[in-house]
Image 1 (cartoon, one colour):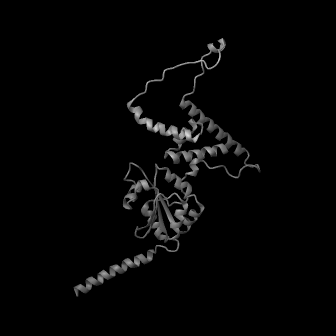
Image 2 (cartoon, helix red, strand yellow; image 1 turned 30 degrees about the horizontal axis):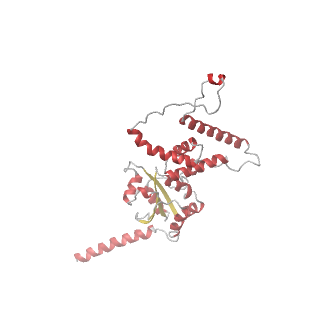
Image 3 (tube, one colour; image 1 turned 180 degrees about the horizontal axis):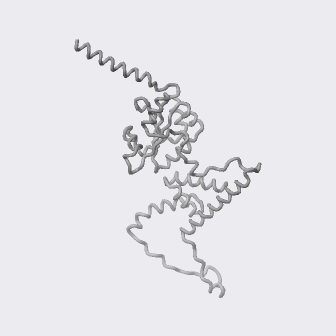
Length: 283
């Protein structure tokens, strides 16, 4: 399990260095290089840099050559064909299969020893669990429904807009919304609503919210504090991947609440004032 944890850490570090957004691609590059981070990063950039050149020019195959490294080869050995060297895909596939087998074997051993006093209390989290969205913390519904719900509870609305293809958004799920202090602050004072923005879609709800509040996709993930009564944006935090930044922002809103009743009374007072003004002019 320790080796698997090391691999998970290497995948995360590889994605941060290369800005690769695919967990599968990151794991495949590391596996093909024997989980050596430096070689995997160089291979990734070489592959990206060479992809455009390969489309225009096809390099001629390297001519085959053979040499005797040391001494003479025995007659029995000379009659045997050389062993085929595995291709990059076969080597990579074999590494992934072996890693999967080890993971299944370790999980089976953990299940068999669940009642043993020396067995760990809980299994290590997988990558999918580490980067899982905060489903148990977010409001399930649309933006306007989330505003109404927050107004009824007299709580500020936290709007979290993420770019689904950016690693920083997955990092936010792991580091911010899984932080115990952040979770407690949200449960006590806010209603959290999370939405993703797709690269090629501007008609989804995430795109509409981004357009309304003028959010730049290259600054995501973004966290907004919104007044649920009138929809006014009270504060904006860009590239919000540090839980301390969220806690500092939340602290300034814990002592106050959006007052729905007072807002209604204020609007009614304005209407009455305008009506009285009209009557006085008519008289």
